[in-house]
Amino acid sequence: MTEDSSTLHEPKRSFGFSTRAIHVGQDPEPMTGAVTVPVFQTSTFAQEAVGKHSGYEYARTGNPTRTALERAFASLEEAAFGVDFASGLAAEDAILRLLKPGDHVVMGNDAYGGTFRLISKVFGPVGVGWSAHDLVDPQELEANWPKNTKLVWLETPTNPLLNIFDIAAIAKIAHSHGALLVADNTFATPYLQQPLNHGADIVVHSTTKYLGGHSDTIGGFVATNDAEIDGHLRFIKNAVGAVRGPWDVYLTLRGAKTLAVRMDRHLSNAAAVVDLLGSNDAVATVLYPGLEGHPGHEVAARQMSGFGGMVSFRAAGGRDAAIRIIEATELFTLAESLGAVESLIEHPGVMTHASAEGSPLEVPDDLVRLSVGIEDEADLLADLVQALRSGL
Ligand SMILES: *Cc1c(COP(=O)(O)O)cnc(C)c1O
Image 1 (cartoon, rainbow, N blue to C red):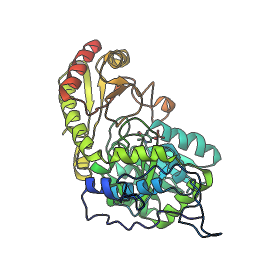
Image 2: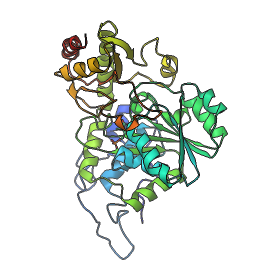
Image 3: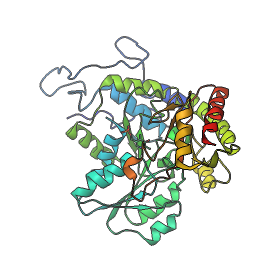
């Protein structure tokens, strides 16, 4: 078995973010000079002699298109290692396989519904314990540290309530108890936040979202500076076959080249949307870490370089008003997912977070979640103004 990206030769920090997104792992192809990484659509690789090969043997184990993405994305997280997975959840599954029966995982009390389902319904029944904590106050976790905790799992900003957790403070507590900290960086993206630099041990992404950025493929990614964890992830990926085809990998790699310019536009459009929502009678509360009144504003300003493109709000008229607003938008498309060029709107309670109903991660039923896209600001604002009338 050959593992293909255990060494990262490219300079990690000497170039700026966009330069790394476009160039790391993506030198011109040596045979032809093609400037884009080819889609190596092959399942196997010819060997020169028995046991003598190019570094690639079989495409479940390694594929050059995938190697390019892994090097590029590791450099975006300023990480030594990175592994591409079939989906965000396949990536999470590989991380959770670090646990054994009897181990415990601590999660934040607001998280992607699928993460909660994976931990509680797949790992729970085979003996992994879990508990949900309000990590906004890390001292609560310190005071109630569950025994046998091996992993602390957080998202920040959280999905869908946009709470902020202090990565450095939580990493310190986890490490003092000998546990690892996993940070889901899907909402922030490496452009706005690098959790490993704040003490997290493992960063996970659904690259389906901002990294890919075009709503055209599913993918996951894990970055770490720990060679042993990287070895575990590669072993699991190969052993269970949680891989993507090279065409999907190529689309994600292509999407990420423009991450920085897309994020700048997501940020400015989100700021305009937050302003508009803040003064609309159909809106009870706007949830956005960029607001000075947001309880996590100071921590967010410290650990992020921008507050992101996701905005949630609670409808003043309750659940029915929330649903009327969501169904009245024309430009904001009613759909699950987030982080792509087009603006999306959804009702987490019924859609993305239905699996959390009745659990500690249940979300309010008057909540509306917006993924603010990169269309023209004026068009987005006009659509929201007309839709919010349905909420009065
Ligand atoms: C979508 C999402 C996931 C799951 O990723 P998939 O690519 O859909 O498997 C995990 N975490 C967060 C925060 C997400 O938004």
